[in-house]
Amino acid sequence: MNKMEKGHMYLALICVLCLKVTQGVRVGNVLIQSEFCQTQLPTAEFAFQFDDDEIFNVDYDKKQARWRLPQFGELVGFEAAGALQNKAVDCQNLETDMKRTNKTAAKPVTPTIQIFPEDPVVLKEPNTLICFVKNIFPPVMKMSWLKNNQPVMDGVSETDFYIASDFSYYKFLYLATIPVEGDVYTCSVEHAGLPNNHDNKFWKPESPSHISETFENVVCGLGLAVGIIGIIAGIFLIFKGLKNNQNRGH
Image (cartoon, rainbow, N blue to C red; front, side, top):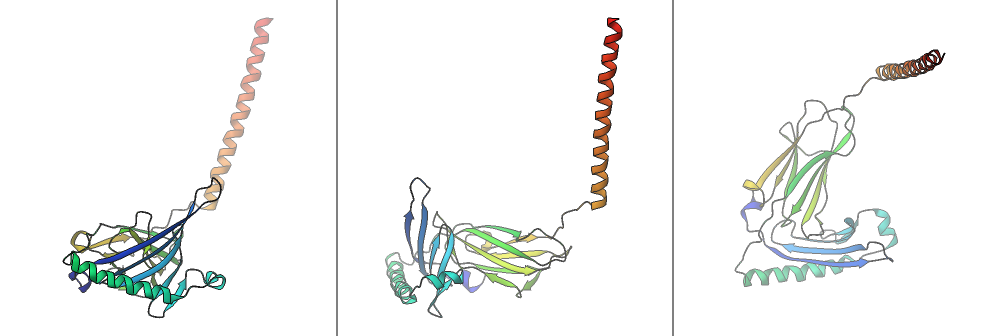
């Protein structure tokens, strides 16, 4: 159990502001401003989302907004000072709530973990593995990749915590790699809601079996030949039936 798991996990405040935008009878879009402060890493987060897509989050160390797409930042701006002020208020509320509740820890929820490739798997061709964890609460979690039981650091990236419609969180961990048959990839997740605070999900690269083009052409040709023979046989039987009817008439 690491340092993250040993301490109490207090969730100071999750502030969620939802603005619903509708047009006529169309289903409305939702703009979400979410923020939280807690005693464990990450200590705080401030982000805007539009229909489950992140617009930007705030880098508290650099004191600037990080736009999901750089083009967004060219069209509009956001002063990180406002997020810093909110962080100070949230963390102050955390201290107050901890004293009022006698440091009662947040009740953790069991997250679910999935692994899947970004593109169809072709052995020895570059691809990206995605470890998707949802139903996260509180948003205190450690994720890492292993390849053949060895930690992997190169080609690894992760997102911030995204907030879902039920106010739980979800997160992605990426790994740029070249799948080779026989390799075993592991997404290791540490969270208080998991049995023993830990769980692993495994993934093995399997290239889909492809039928050779020559074999496909042979099968197609045989099918066409059988179809033509069936048509000829059908015409022959029709004419034979008509001839038999004529003989019976005579």
